[in-house]
Image (cartoon, rainbow, N blue to C red; front, top):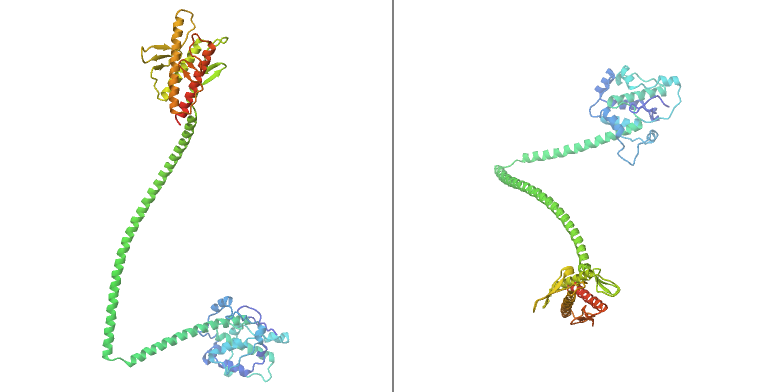
Length: 490
């Protein structure tokens, strides 16, 4: 049966244990007698609560209630119904300082509902703590009014419950009643305080033992000799400690000096390192510039090498003296050398062709560093000539003329001598090339004024034969030029 009681901490409704119904007046008297008479009488006379110091404050307990959990993780907090079923521990009798623990652990229980009339319940509903404090304080227990002979069980139960809760509230810092969960938290907090107090007590006991031992040793006393010896020993230890301290101070001074030197070395090394990195960066920049220059030079070298290779493969002499043929005519640089009936070739073209031919022979001899013994070549284009270096040192013109006059016969004779002299110089150059390279083969041999059994003289000779002999001359010059530009270098 609920009587409107609520937990003074969590404000949850409470149900009291059925065992409180049968609480005898003698049990109540025994519980109230455990309180000091002065405090109990003071509380009863003045209506104020008695608050001893050792217990925790309400604010502390309220904070602990929200964060404290049972010390045993395997044993969860018991519900009010389970707490009501727990067996009550028996003891010979609560001590004066343990009565509130017994009450919290065994008295606050849930009780099953009991039928009662509304008026009676309302009449005997327990008052709150504030109302109980405000109500007149009952007289001391010795002057209490005797209970009726046949009191109503409900009224007796309510009066007993209210008095027990008032006793608990006046004895402790905690307002009562409390629910089972709040009581469990309170017990956990008290157990922790108990453990801490036990540890503090053990420390005091150990300290007390040490003090007793010291007092016992002092009580035994020492002789004068023992005291002097101890004093000497202590002085020696003091001197040793002083020496050690001085040595430590000297070592500290040495270490400070070493530290100062090391700091100076460190600064010097830092400056040297900074200088090294500056020089390193400068060196890297220089290396990058040199690499760029090297890359440029390599590119230029590759381009120049390609140009050189192309130029080496190019034969400038073949470009300067292009020897070929045009029908029955041998040509040099497009100029025909010779005359045949039916194909008129101007003497200006023939003379220019002879000038190119004499220049080619002169260049080949100079390239081979060869000097003719009896003749000196004088290339002068269309008016080239050959000078004799021995004997009368005559000069012969290597060009012809088509004028019809008496001097033509004399001129043609000098022209023939010049062509024979050219053929002689060509024969000596061919012999020099054969002496240098026996693999060189000339298809036409030169014997006096003939090359390939054909004379190079113009007088008393047919124009076709003369033209064929000149073609043989150009072929021989082409072979000499090829060997001079390729074979001699190889």
